[in-house]
Length: 405
Image 1 (cartoon, rainbow, N blue to C red):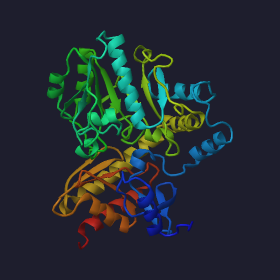
Image 2: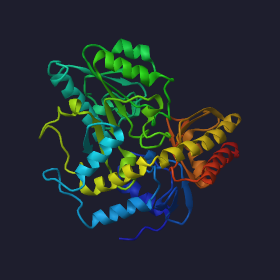
Image 3: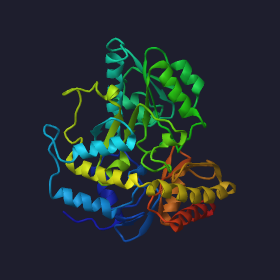
Image 4: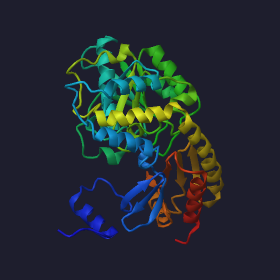
């Protein structure tokens, strides 16, 4: 077999043998360090997406790589049929970070969301007292929680849903940020309200001030669990450890993933107090790789890095630079800019160009970003980026917006 060497070679192979469930830019990344990556032909790019926040700490962070290399030589997997010397310390450290009693580790973000759904339903039956096969979970329009069959059952994204029915029942959808609609939807049969504190895939959509506090109060009043999907928004991305922290809100269940694995391995978890998590019993839920020693060793180091507050402060500082620079671009075709910490969504004038076209223009100038919903792009640079990197990012956006079509 011939060895691929050029960008077109690698793209042709992927197009021929890998399912077409993504539509990536014509860039083939071969290596990464910090906030920058290099393609197979030696071109460097600033990574303004950071794996949808999985790479909050950048590519190949030396602390995380050192832990991964050490653990790789020691023990990688036992499965949960046995104990390991990494799981207990990881669960303790993550419980302390979240302020919760217990942790249930999984792998992907979607698995963690599914786990939260299962815990909420079982809690509804065993604690709240609803009949078996009864009870609803209220979700938000514009949500993105993953791509399993159950999760796409309550997605409002036509592309994510089409052709995958019949769908899982038991979900009620209300407009994101509409507390009155939520209040009307929550009933005695509601076991949980599931939401993203900031909708990432939706284009970094931030709810109205006070919405999270009102959700918290409503859930307490109606005896329903508040489930916060912090997979993209959590772990320093918004300038706080969790996006819920901006309103001093503590949900009943945190759903975590992406950056928890340091951009090295998939690692996710839910965190809850004992009165919720105790509904999980031996054999009622599990995962072969969930909580494996390699992933949890890396996760422990991620938690140690977060406990200093350094990355939260850095995301705040760099986020202020990003916001200041982006707010100057409104006259160049931006209809709206939303930002919280080092995270931003930009809505383009669709008559100017699509989000995908802007991303291609940016890539040609050495910056990688991702479009969503046609005319929006998302920015989530690694928190290890420099102020110069952030100013360069916005400069490239400006050049891309005003360049000849």
